[in-house]
Image 1 (cartoon, one colour):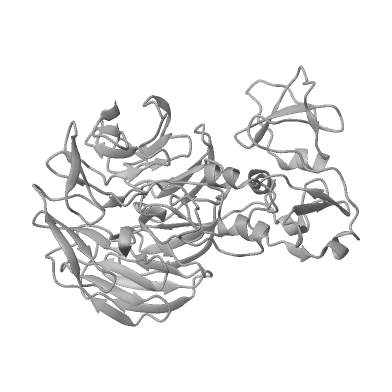
Image 2 (cartoon, rainbow, N blue to C red; image 1 turned 180 degrees about the vertical axis):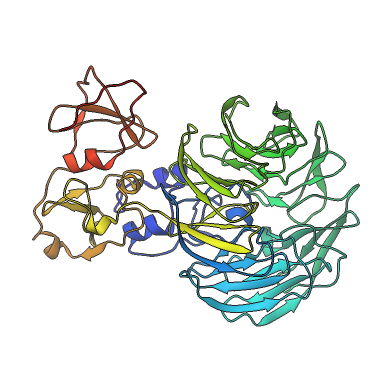
Length: 515
């Protein structure tokens, strides 16, 4: 064990390095781009759908219920996912080409008019100092992220087809019409233009080693060296691609090809599996840490496909789903639908939350560092959706809640229950107790010694077995407690407030007796 409570290998393997959680255990410091943290997750949302891999994986626990925290209304559709700076500033783009910078509470900080429509998305540079957007006149523009002043405008490339992506050497990659893949230098001047056999679709993706990956409308996935030359290899798809390529934490590539989701090996052109669902796919997939793939389709269903290419579950919504999902650190999935509803699911497909906008929700969902969802709609609004559950700091007596204390000397975090402090063993447990976004009170060892110590909180990772003071035994599955009628010899006793904080999962027909 190190001073930060959990070994580094736990953090890096699980991707649990969110601002809200890492701040609690490290005193609020932010991970840098070169800190060794997985590029799939970040303390800020710099790239399209969270990173240059576009996996839709976020390192923070999302809401378990949905209510509006705030919204901002414009005059045109909001179909682009937001970018979020480390200081909490949110950047949003509406289809009419208005770029807005908002505070974390939704207050407008500055706006800029592109002067043309845009179907791209705002993207921040690695340091978060510039915000970048491509437009329908073929230019990429850069603004000072703090005050909105223009910094540079690129040459005209006809039409920018999607969002830009930051690659190795801080090159700015994007697809342009007339069969071009373009890289700009950080100052906006041209680095290279690659002529393609056909137009690309969507947004380039960049692997951990800097390889640039694109899909083209002639039915190919093509990979290029970090400077664009040469092309390393290509994969023939079963049909023309209908989504951009995304990259999972396992390095696999995923792309929608008409009615099929296709998985491609990370270091060869080999197709690993193809999953046909019988209806077109325009929703870019999100990839969980276990390799599961989530996406929507034109039949109005949300699909979960296992790492081996088998259907795990599907759920019917009321209209075609072109929104791209987001996955939180607990494996929960959030996605919008053309029926105007944002849906939240557990990893096994159980609905945990819904929110209804006034029109179709087609934008990709983004999970902010504070755990809020950010999603745009055809009703011209950007919504910030927060958890509608209890306030941790003022929790009722039969639930866990109150203060969190962080030991400045060791980094260990404690939750106070009935005036005594209990050590919290891991970030998943912290999030499942509802405290993932609560700031701790920093305490010196001398101050901490004044708070009596109680038994540590048992781990609430899936598969854990816990028991209450009454002898009832539960197994943790998908963040819920499942009764184990026969008991378990290896159960760890948990405070009753912890037991009651976790939702109880029971099957239909079970008879329950209250106390």
